[in-house]
Every structure is written in C-alpha cells, then in structure tokens.
Image 1 (tube, rainbow, N blue to C red):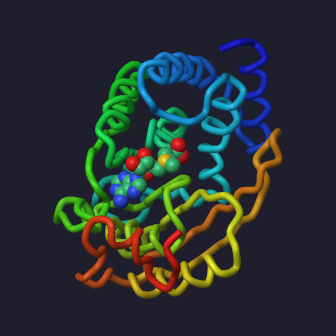
Image 2 (image 1 turned 120 degrees about the horizontal axis):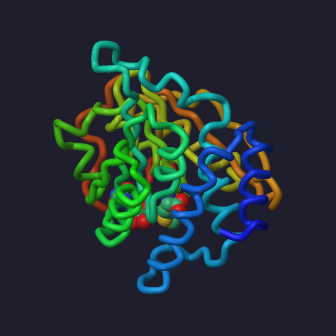
Image 3 (image 1 turned 60 degrees about the horizontal axis):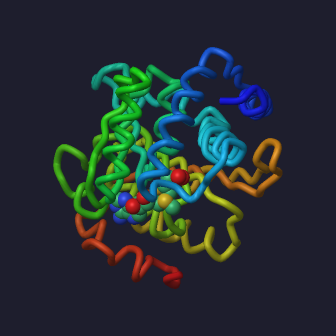
Length: 254
Ligand SMILES: C[S@@+](CC[C@H](N)C(=O)[O-])C[C@H]1O[C@@H](n2cnc3c(N)ncnc32)[C@H](O)[C@@H]1O
C-alpha cells in the first residue's frame, strides 16, 4: 500500500471513530492479495488502491456504526462468549475480512454462493492469520434450512447483496431470537423500506433503525438498516433457491 493509500485508510477510520493504525499492515496485505487475485479472476468490480481502500475497506467498517455488533456475544447466553456472526453474500470477503481484522472477539462465517470467491476469502484469512473467519460455500436459501445453521447466529451482516425484503427472508432464518440483521446498503427508498418492514414482520423481524449517512472522503450515500429477530421464522421461509429474489415478499423484483 502506498503512503497515500495508508493515509486514506487512516482518515476513513478516524471519520468512523476508529484508529486503524494497528491494522494498517493487515489491510496492506489484503490489498495485495485482492489485487493479485483480481488480475487472475473476476473477484470484485473495484480496481485501484483508492477505490479498494475507501469502497471496500472503509465502507465495510461502517457496519460498526451504532455499536450493533458490540455485544454480539451477549445474545444466546450460555453458548460461549464469542459472538457468532454470518456475513451473507460476502463476495471477496466484505465486510467479513475487515471486520475480522478489527474484531478478533467475533467468530465470522463468510458465506457466498460462488465457490471461487469463498476460496479466496479462506486463503486471505489464512494469510492474514485470521482464525476467526470460517468460509462457507452455498446458497442462503438452502443453508438457512440446515439445522446447524438455522438460528445459529447472533448477528447477520450483509453488504450490497439484495433489496431489503429479500435480505429479510434470507437472513432472519439464520438468527437466534433477539439477534440482529445489520444490512449495509446504498440509498434506501421509502418504498423499499416499507416492503422491507413488512417482509421482516412476515419472517419474525422488526426494523430497529435506519441510519442514513455518507461514506467518509467520497461522500457517497449509504444506509445501515438494523432488523431485530423478535420471533422464530415460520418454517416455510426461506422459500426455495432463487424464489426470494424473483418474487420478493411485498416487493417487485428488480
Ligand atoms: C454484489 S456482491 C457483494 C459482495 C460483498 N458483500 C461486497 O460488498 O463486496 C453480492 C454477493 O452476494 C452473493 N449472493 C447473492 N445471493 C446469494 C444467496 N442467495 N446465497 C448466497 N450468496 C448470495 C453473490 O454470489 C455475490 O457474491
């Protein structure tokens, strides 16, 4: 990472109230791994140090806004003191890898349907010495029905994966009652929020916060949506693979 890239990383962190100095070397290694791997396969659309630092690294860490992940281990008392976090649709490891660098106390499962992306996340986690990241390949619709996955997590984080009604159906089955979905999105329309609120209620959730803000340095619009699981998800959800995206609850497919 160049001195300019490091300065941007630290500036972005400061804007989020985070001192990233201790993790700067880890982020530099991740930048190298991502750049090398992207030259060989289609891992991420973002290219170039500035974009990766701001729109992958700093953007990923905005899931820490509001402190919703601070007490992830407190949910489901008696299950150990490590918060179980699922990153649903992690892609090349975002937000899972930046989050794991900052929060060794969290046990993060990085799930994606695309094997080569998950394999990259596993390789990157090993190179970074992150023993708190577990890669998982598969579709959320199917894994969310497996007994060892369903209701297995304190938090689900997810960045840039789907419309809110789709996220609610895919994510809520993974959460213990009392757990939280922390969804990172771009701008959110009132219509999407309305459909997402109704979809969340259908699968056992309630929207707790909608936090609209701008990404440090770039000024891009972002929204962090927090949904609490207040009741078990009905057995019929999630519907079979592809259906939540094709026929979203209370929403039109995009
Ligand atoms: C636009 S990418 C975002 C990746 C990453 N979260 C990021 O912010 O860079 C969306 C990812 O979600 C994954 N995905 C979408 N629907 C999924 C599903 N039903 N189950 C598992 N992964 C899914 C895709 O394979 C893709 O890698």
